[in-house]
Image (tube, rainbow, N blue to C red; front, top):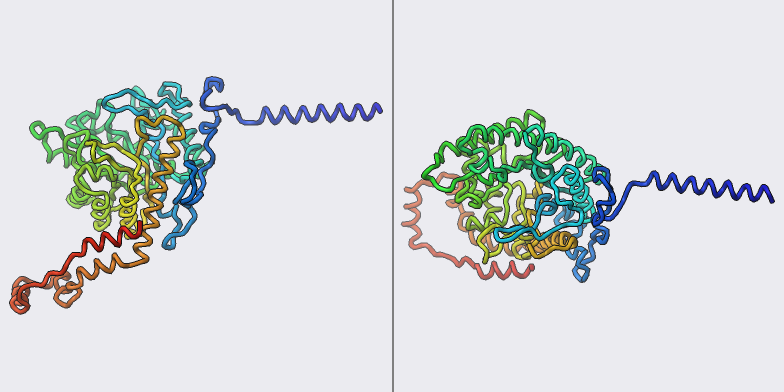
Length: 480
């Protein structure tokens, strides 16, 4: 009996010891809305989205807002998995730094993990939230601006040190989560030093500072395994030509991009360099107005083999084009590299960065992407933000789910149109006269004006066929 009691006592002590070890060895966790109890956030491993499950594909009949209706990552479309056609990426700046502020109102979003500071510990907490978010969303990529993920310091050295510290954590988290950087970039438009531009600033010291900032941003993008690096010239333009030497500014921009391409090679960064066109806002006129303007700039300065384009749909409409037009312009010039999946509001005159949920537009976009053979190493990043009035944490997920479903549905529709072949046949038929011997000579540059004049006298008045626009639209609508 004594032996039995002693055995029970020893077993109880052993169980308590095992329990204590388990408690001590477990990572510190606490809810995101009670971060003060967790102390310093550097080592904090709480649950930022405790009420959000991992988002799964449930099909078109699902009524669950936290599920995919059309995006099925592993499903094959035209011989490639959906996730490989779409290569979705979450934009850190809108998702984790967006506050709902607009030109007429103060911030409206106060996420439960925020402490009201832009400290290093807060930056690390946001980074942890980022990886929990993309993991639950089932997205493989993320993208960032340098100053969005780490606070600006009083000196360049301090800013670089801050960035290094946050990037070290990002590297650890993305390795653990098996995620990748779609692209990185330097924020060269918010700080007052860039009020005249960065690479096009009238001040030499600002130009040099921008170069140093891009150098560092490119280095950390390379360190994180980024597949692209983006240049968005937020203030590379002018308000008036009365005080602007446009020729000199554009030349300076070209020299800046030449130096960036050279440094990319020097550090062994194999990612694609991307220019993002935008016509105006915040400047009256920006030098990379649209895809055609940017392509002409690259050709003029011999940079056509060094850069591709990151097309943003909302920027396309601001320049007076459709997103489809910009994508096709980039594609036929061999410059389509990446897509900012967003849209604007036709009743609002500025860049509203809304999630793209229009199925027709998504289908047109995917027709270009399929014709391009995909976007890799680029992809789709959601340069889109919640509406000012959407303030729940779950809205972050719902917005991305809607955007992902729209693009997936567009992919399905585009695949239907391609497999059906009717639309392509209509286009071929419209240009069939150029499939003749004379047409081949024209397209080969071997038909001079004298020969064509002779043929006109032989043929008489041309017979002009219908363009069949309504039929083309009918075929397109049938795939919706």
